[in-house]
Image (cartoon, rainbow, N blue to C red; front, side):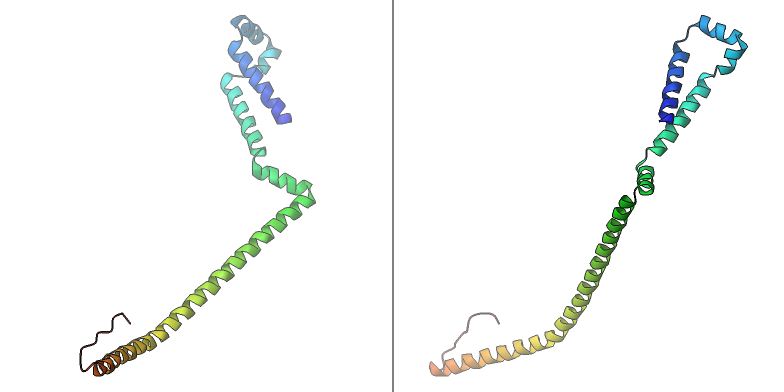
Length: 151
């Protein structure tokens, strides 16, 4: 509140400084007590900027959150539980990723082990296909038999 009042006061002084007529300025500068209160335009702008920067700093979300933490134990507890929930979620996701990676390695090893067996079964099936074609050929008096389809 004090910063807002000070900022409003400085803005009013800035407006007065820009719109003041020359007679008023000469009257103020002739009086020693009032001339001490007279501040230059640059000095007034720098003070206004300093007050605005301080107010903006205090109005930032981080400062507000720190003030809420300081003022309310329930807010701090909610924030702590929210943080704990995020940590638990991260740990769960990490654990799931490790399990998936482990499963991937296991499946790759299983695939590598199954490949030779697959090739062996394919060769046996091809041989059985040829034997079947020859057997059917003998039934049909030696005619060529072509069994269609891929293995």
